[in-house]
Figure 1 (cartoon, rainbow, N blue to C red):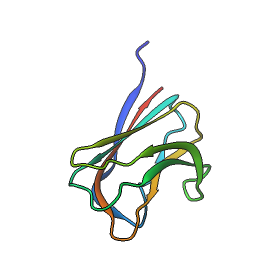
Figure 2: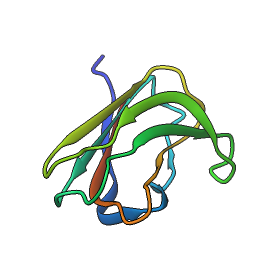
Figure 3: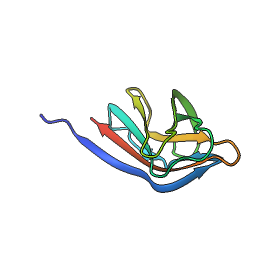
Figure 4: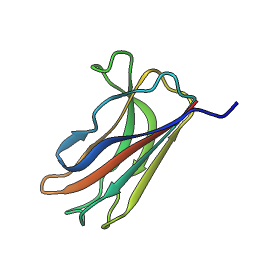
Length: 111
C-alpha cells in the first residue's frame, strides 16, 4: 500500500509582523507533519523564533514545544517536523516592533 501524502499551502505572500500565525489546518489523519516557512522577500529587523501550536478545535491554541528560527534572509527556509500531534496545527511567531517577513508556509503531511 502506498502512503497517503498531501502538501497544503497555508500562507502565501503574507506579510507577518507583530504577533503572527498561519491559518489552522486539520491534520488528525496524518502521522507525520513538516512545516516549511520561506522568506519571499528580505526580512526586516531581527528574525524571531517561531513555534508550532496545536488545538483541539482550531480556535484555542497551545504551544506544542517545537521551536525554530524564522528565516533571516531572502529565500531562507525554516523547517519544523512533528510526529505526535492532535487534530489542528499552525505556525506562530512574534516579531519585534518594526520587524517583518513576507512568508510562504507549506505543510506536508504523510499518513
